[in-house]
Each structure stands twice: as C-alpha cells, then as structure tokens.
Length: 68
Image (cartoon, rainbow, N blue to C red; front, side, top):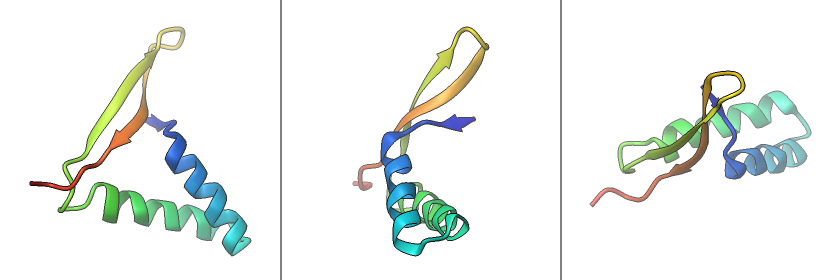
C-alpha cells in the first residue's frame, strides 16, 4: 500500500539533504517508521482512503500516540 503521509515525505527530504544520499535517507525514514512510529511503545493508527479511479487504497496519514 502506498503511503502519502506528508510527515514521512518531509522527513525523507530532510534526511536526503542532511546525508546527501537518497539510499541513506530512505533507510533513516524506514528506521523511524518501524522503530518509532510503529514501535512497541506506540498505539499506531493509519488514516486510509481510496483512489476510486484505480480501485486502490493508500495510507494518507499516520497517528502514533504513546501507549497508555
């Protein structure tokens, strides 16, 4: 499923500019997504929607508050 979350896109741009390497930037975003946003201390929820024209679902946003 494609993720169009603005925060992740911005994080990628910041990491790309900081490291001057798109591969390293992608690895940093992946690390943040799996280790922090979807980590065991978070109660992660995804906002999803469809692209009716293509019949596909996409992730529009991620809400990741701390677990109680």
